[in-house]
Length: 267
Image (cartoon, rainbow, N blue to C red; front, side, top):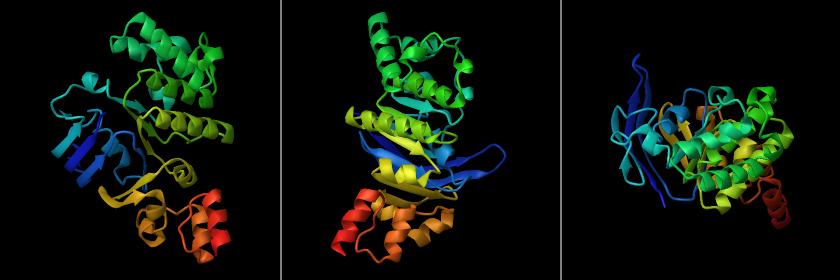
């Protein structure tokens, strides 16, 4: 099982912009973590350190004991899968099947294992009937699913989703939620960057709020989303039900319909 350890991480872009300013975090194996915050708060910069796409200016990032400053990106790819916000930045094969098979083949898995991983990833993303289709003949919604499948098929211990619900319809958002739930059952660590605070509240147990390259809040979803005044510093509004619960002076912070109704009964 792979633990993520980030210690006093600083990162300054070549132009001089200090994007991360002393972040220290530990993410345990199997945790489901949502990272929230306004644009420019450092979310994407932070997660790009987890697979070696960016190197710390100072501080350290350890992925299961591997120092990302010493481990090659190709080596880290066996532990960390990254789904980009825009699938068009990720897709390059002529068919969905080839796209989804590329990652596990590149990791050196045998044909039998690759076939099993691809079949599983296609089924999980509801793409089994689209294997021979060119990804760019699909809608943006389905191209997002292809991007997800191409990472799921690599069977990494850590999966990062960058704004997975952006531009997706309600059916696709529900599909993504089901994928995350299945990855949770499999013991995967799932880290998601999101502006979709309702999706965050429904699907993640731990929330980290970033502001100006620092950790503003870090705790359970109920703890973090209940701190409306502090979240406002990074221009994040708690879910509507959370805010309504506060206005109704419910004793507990709630984040979804089930919790809201249960707290209402206790009032």
